[in-house]
Length: 275
Image (cartoon, rainbow, N blue to C red):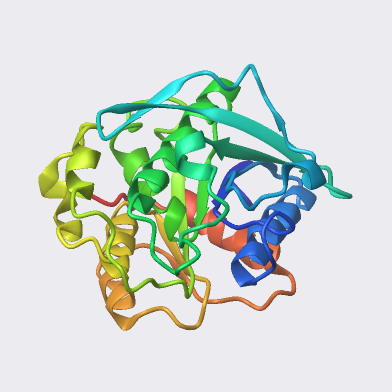
């Protein structure tokens, strides 16, 4: 018997807004099946500049937009847009900001250079999701983050938003995909997270902000982990094995929600809290 009803899905790729791959497929399919299962969902992604606003009929939600988020001690306006995936009538909320998301690319420029502010873009996206959900006055019981870009949701939920009644009791699940990058994030990432009151001792895992270390930090604060691809590094798997949290291996595309319903129920019932 499910003991949860509301699931917040956060993904940086959702089909049809970005080209289909396994992550963008899961970014759409899992929330869709959860909705069909009778669950109440909210679905978020970044409004990358390569998302065609006209074709997909995005429009700004004025009542949700208008606040500023501080990242690295600087103000950044938060713009919220929304669109519907037809024929499912599933709403998608988009986190937007001119500085971080106007460029017509996701993580790399035309010369295949990793954007130097990808860490700040991730911080802004995750904070933007939390702040928008607060404005909606909606209380998720499960927060499912798909991919590395939304992984900081777990860290923020257990620290910055730990005392917020909307989020304090939520359980966070992270799906890890085969999307490893060779570059490192900004070496000042710890310093930037300290602006949001995080203890540097809790962030030691990202002294060297590699992909593996970033994902390990997120896993440390999660209540469950999904290996969404067969190719997840042994380093990450070994670390997750020390955390004592529920783990789900990669799943076939058929009957996804039946498996995830059982997993969410296990996570929701679990008293394990990452420290």
